[in-house]
Image 1 (cartoon, rainbow, N blue to C red):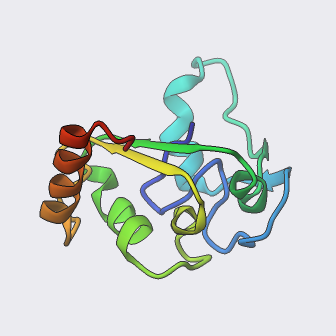
Image 2 (image 1 turned 180 degrees about the horizontal axis):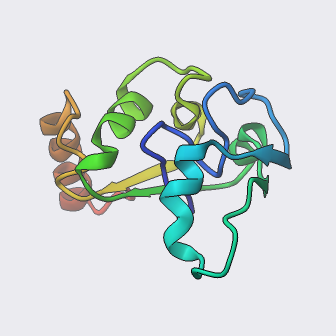
Length: 132
């Protein structure tokens, strides 16, 4: 289960992370620390480092599920789903995953160029009883 940052990071694999990276200690960007400060009390320090699964490790999973909500994630979602696979958008590595599911609200999906097609495919899957 993965979330996506506004800069396209997943699992704290910030832009420029190696697409083949393994589980490791990673430095967090200031923006990621700011975005996650809400999870810490006033008397707690937001960590500067984290332990994360690397992008290569994520690709080894049997099923990857990415969940995104809000317009603030729309550009990152579009880059991840429809842009080139690139270390500039670590979440784009999910295009290479054999079984990745992306779950979005309308706002997070709002910048997808092929949104109508994705909805059509989902409707067909539902009608035929296929998995997403």
